[in-house]
Image 1 (tube, rainbow, N blue to C red):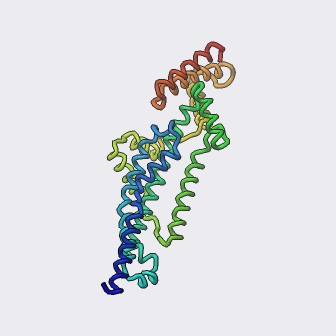
Image 2: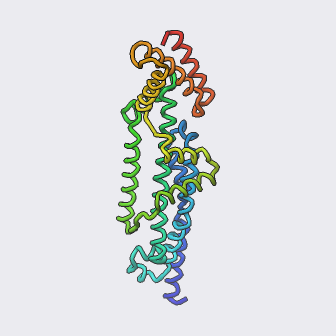
Length: 292
């Protein structure tokens, strides 16, 4: 064997060995591990629709990642001197068109993911209002939140929306730093349509209804204090329709009675398991026993 042929074989064997040692990166599996590591076990059952939604987004990116991996390995098979003088961009991407297509897909994924995160937050506020107002469990829930963020109540929903926009902006900035010059071109209606398609495909009609109510302003996400203030105003209107001027001892008595009814509705909520309801009823019994 000629020295040149021997070198080519040695180099080829080295690249093949290197390729075999590069693990196949699966974004779907990575997201699953990330989700389980970051999401407390007691919240996972509530956000199963989002887990499947984001896994679907990650699954659609996998072919792009695999093609980049294959192109990189195939590029390394070239003459090593030629490879050394080749730009990293050319080693990773088969063409400028593929790079643009990949960047566009990442951008659209960011738009979809941020919107799904916003709807998930809407659901989160509904769950919070239930758990916050439960006997015994409410106290535990507030303590956990205090340990996590130093507050007894969630911040306003506007704050959460700002945080989602901030994270999305940081992601776009990082993409730009990597050389992906992508400007969002999905309209709000297109993003909404994709959300409905994915949730319908996964069998989560409840999320589609939640998204619709949210956009039609039939449901406004509120933290516990805001929800309590809104409830009090509703009871004032209700009380005034009885022909009595609101305020004073009579109103407070009526309000307290309606608040107890509301608490029972929270206890019977779909967000509570049988065990949680049992704990709540025990708490309600002791509240009654001690006149609370």
